[in-house]
Image 1: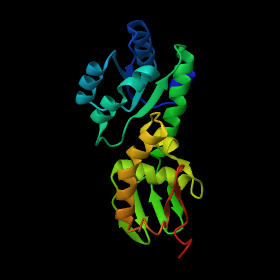
Image 2: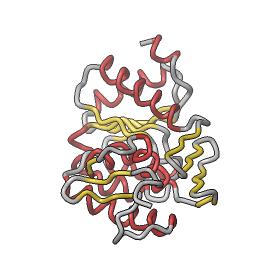
Image 3: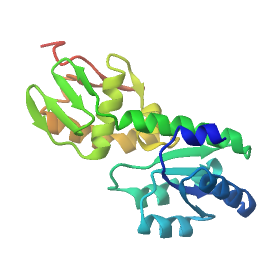
Image 4: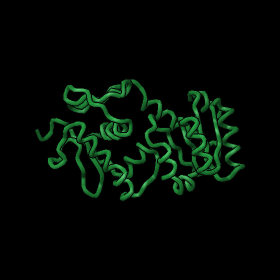
Length: 219
């Protein structure tokens, strides 16, 4: 695992697991890898740590996460950027940290200073800025991430569940995911000046998800 640690910057890691022995073992491993790590066995402990400092990465037992996702994400609401969340499905430590390493690499790519363009829509990751038809548009962090995911897969339908997984880092069934996204999609359209009745640019594909089309299409 030493090789994995060399690939990652020093991070604030919060480990959540109801089994004290497993949780403390993961905590020791994270500290040995050079991270600033904390462990919490339950939601009360998690909320206490989050109130002190927002972690960069949360490694959480998947069953715990499914039971407590509402409480966790309520505590994280408004945080920018949101921490990466790595659901833990195995007690094998190498598997856990392999997964964490891949997630951190994705996080570092996400926050890199690259610029993405889809037609007249420009997303500058370094400046966290959106340019729409030559004009800057201010988007809150969650809406910026939603638009970024859709831009990366422009021309493809991204399911509600996939979009929630990529933006929030959680698993949700389709009705839950659709409700979670609805208000944010509406706000993105409003800020870009899009008419949802025309179905332009940010397209809702009924029963499946959303798709970003080139702003020049259909004009």
